[in-house]
Image (cartoon, rainbow, N blue to C red; front, side, top):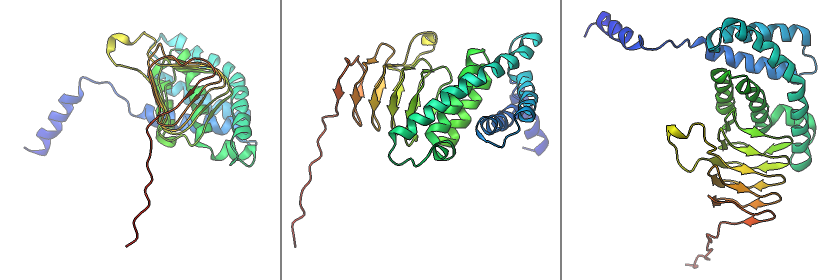
Length: 263
């Protein structure tokens, strides 16, 4: 097969799509610029916000599925939400500092904690999700996923303060709901019991009430599953039903230790 024929065949196979890959790289640039604007003390706010507006509107041209005048107005709505989002993120950072003995100061949380970064991009992408900018929000959350190893769907409802420690391998689904003062460790999944397209508008993911701690690699599944407040879910636990308040959930698998025989 000649090069020209290969090119022709590729072109024909691409004709059914209208993908503009530039939106992906622009969204990543926007995400980093937004994080810098909100958290760097030296960031020139007026200038940075103007730059963010330009990027936002460039992305919206591709990502917004509404009439042009509605797409243009979304930036103003998103911008108006930023002070409220920043307030929540400051609460999240303080909660992390207060609960992680390894944290030395608040600057360390903002600069070096992948869990905080994942929470920050979730909260920002959630505002886009609420404004029906679904592709834009998904691209932001997937960027954070790639950077931190934490996959939080922008549609999840997570109150503040919230603490993610170590971050890697966490999955939080679209219809998950998490109340205040919840702590989650690496490898935790808040997922669906089953997956089919006709469940798109259903509550598929768990609800976690206040002051719950979920330890590493616990899996909690199902839209009707509720973890009652002040409960602890131990590491490697598998939960598919509601857990009452003030409960401790343990994986009962035991590990035996044997002493090696001396030769």
